Image 1 (cartoon, rainbow over the protein chains, first blue to last red):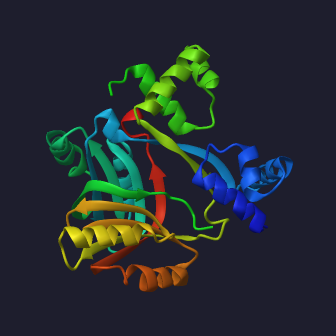
Image 2 (cartoon, chains in turn yellow, red):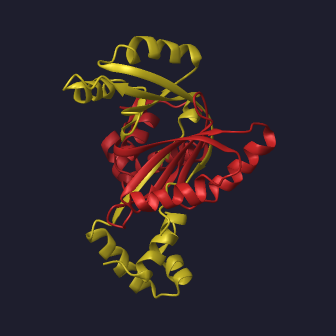
Image 3 (cartoon, rainbow over the protein chains, first blue to last red):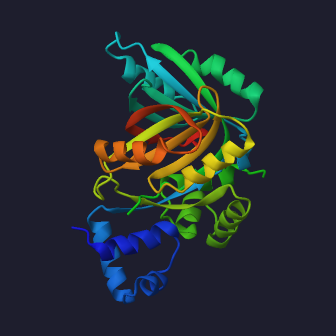
Length: 151
Length: 151
């Protein structure tokens, strides 16, 4: 089970994933060996799963990002499976999420410009199976992207 | 920035497993460790590699629910947008804030311990934000990050 010391260590690691063990130890008022041992235990317990890199698609020339929110035709029993299988084939899709709510599935898609987006939308998105409704949210700016947990 | 196929291959390797060292990636791609390291540094300096994040097992840490909120502001104008953005980014349970164009003005990713904890965040924190109008909530069921154009 997790205690306050584990949480303190994880808070430091969340704020700077590259922080050295010695630095974490100093900030938490612990010995480095203690921090190492606890990090090891958090890894073994599948609490700490490692690192992930963030890619800034805009810097790679994809200046358009759109959230496409779909409601699927649920009278078709295989609607979800077939829709998701189709979406996985589209290289411009960078994330797929499924929901409980008015929206069934959301796709994050990127495109180099509006003309590219229009092509993608017509040729690859609108041809996906079992779409009942579809709406688009165009990203203007990302104000916060922490994805940290309030530990 | 302009990238070549080797840069894209490095990005793909890091997206799949961020724990790999420059030496390990270089070996797979037939590049020397220093050459791979220099390319990674160049991608980081240009902001394409926007950073590393800690991957935590949210459920094991007691955060079982992720809800996406679409928020329409009731009053518009420059001042109200700034007030809203400042207040919303300060909520610890709000992981991401995106300014969007379409049906909603903002898209929020909110993490909570369970649905009643989410209700608390929604009522006490989100609904009391300056200028909030219509709010739509969708509970996340599953999430897949795709390699996108790197795949």
